[in-house]
Amino acid sequence: MTESNPQTTDQIRLTGEDEMVNFAGRMSSILMGGGLVFLEGTLGAGKTTLSRGLIQALGHTGPVKSPTYTLVEEYDLPEGRVCHFDLYRLGDPEELEYMGIREYLTDGTLCLIEWP
Ligand SMILES: Nc1ncnc2c1ncn2[C@@H]1O[C@H](COP(=O)(O)OP(=O)(O)OP(=O)(O)O)[C@@H](O)[C@H]1O
Ligand SMILES: [Mg+2]
Image 1: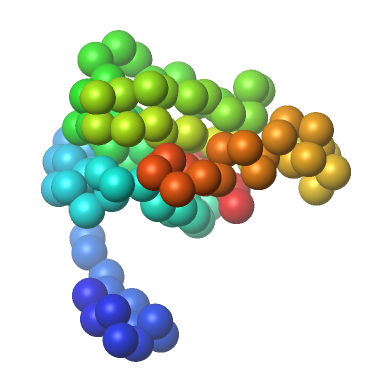
Image 2: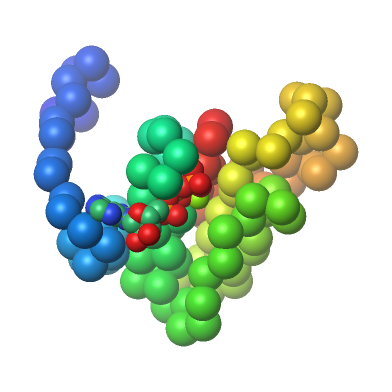
């Protein structure tokens, strides 16, 4: 990946859930200090799978449920706080204010956002 040119896109082919989770584990080392990741892709593209791989690689041992109905799931992990959003069912952008989205988007927190 080229940091100097944000237009550069690299493609990585991941075949199957295991490869996705493995890739997420490799990504986790650069996301430990926090960050904002927009997960874009069609229904069933693997956004939650990638999130699960990241959250578990950062120390979560239990299951990772899709935040489709809750909008956000929070994890306080040894490697820092992770907030996993799924905004597919968001009816109105105002709801983001009601849920206090600004409180989540802080330094040191890793925010993973499905359907950004
Ligand atoms: N790289 C991959 N190749 C093939 N199948 C995959 C891959 N990653 C995930 N899957 C499988 O695709 C299915 C859907 O994955 P997932 O729930 O992560 O998608 P999603 O993008 O979060 O969907 P949604 O838009 O509904 O939130 C799961 O059964 C998962 O195991
Ligand atoms: Mg999902």
